[in-house]
Image (cartoon, rainbow, N blue to C red; front, top):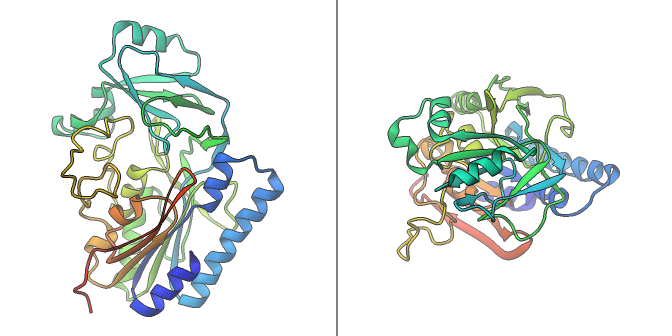
Length: 327
């Protein structure tokens, strides 16, 4: 991946680059890995970061999206009267739609469920409007640490490790130390405005315990809610705003997709979100990574190259050109 990023950087000369390193996340998530193996994997990731920065000369902004914890057990939502929805990128959260009274009784007696949050309560947590409630489930279900949901949208592969409930995530940059993940965007903008070439480097499955350089901690939560490493967290980093209602946990992702979907290779995305770093930057931008289609939809970069793989089913490499008019 680093070689691809270096080749494209040399050919296109971008001033903003977004890189996502995810090998360590997938290796830990779906297969057993002892401490020594994990240590070697993490060391390799940071060696690649050093190689890119040293060769390309970018100012780094490095964010670990949160650590992993062993899967202790699952909460099965398939037996409910209503519809339980989670995704394979989510572990701690699921949405409950069209719930019956019996569903709520059953769930509230489950010792592995941390809470069932009504739609209005979740809306109020982030100051949402009635318009923002459109995609929210009736109830947001929150699992206790180490537990994941078995529901519509989940991966067919049972994970060994799942995203932890990290209220703080590691951050490193000579540009400063943001208190919250929504403040990272301001640091990137200030670096670009000062004429720097900036590389935002996202590390999947990396929490404070795995970060190999000196770092500061960055807030990843609001009250009881902490971001998992999904679309909403990446959107908060890239836009500088909490935009949880655009891609909330547990929503009916299959609704209104239709045959005329504008982006057929882009999962549940219906449009390219406005206001991200790449979309708002007048200079050239590039994104390269190996996590998912979120890269080319959320980065706003002119050029995107990503590993188009799902749950270890390799479907090749996807290249996207968003802009051709920059010089």
